[in-house]
Image (cartoon, rainbow, N blue to C red):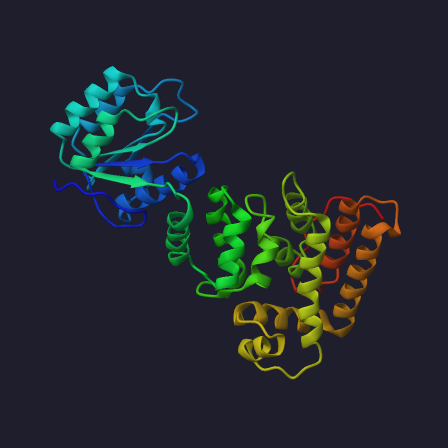
Length: 349
């Protein structure tokens, strides 16, 4: 088989694939993409066998080779994944090299770095007979090119300002990029253009909860889910209470601007709000009509009071102030016909 290197996202079926890099998050993300590509629509539970990783103290190469030495039965291929390949012993590497010299058709070995340094012999052998996927972002221009490549594959499109902010905010923590992009797509819709204003609320909550989880739960009148989402947003290393308050204020200000207007459709709502995403504008228009004038005004009053209280207007902790406000906001939503509200945990008054 012709040897070649490949970047992430490049489609190819090989006898062996090595995913390497220093950031465990990036290696894990790239490994998922590689396995998804190799599955080619197949069922992972039937085609994939995994070894190594935190659950295994030692990698049993005997079991790995047993799987690699048996041709797939009633299946197009067998994918054998070995995590933390840096933990392989020298004798294990010799046995894997022997298999690479004479692989069984239909069996694919996928190695993921971690657990130590990868043996140079193994890297060279994979480079000759299969594919090496590097997750290293590099520095300077290389890092910029890596970031551009990831954003080009994203479900949303970041403008220049948002791209610069994303890069600056993440620093070396590039493993968070996938989560932020997924949250943006969930909030604004596939293909949406995202600027700085749309991006900012999602930066602090990556890996914990997305702000749109909270606003969607409030809009649905689901108090229990709203409080759960709020708790995740305010967890260690996540968003500051005032940042969450800003998200909620922007959410309800959009409804206030649409309140009472004869706006026909999402595109018209987007023009009124001055936003690119008709998806987001449509959600604001629908919720503004659902709450009605009195409901929207009451929501603004609740948020204004909460903002003052978090800035010293009360002796309550900011997190508790937000919890009370979120509970009250979710209870503004009229119950749908035939729908019973989920019970919410008790909130301090």
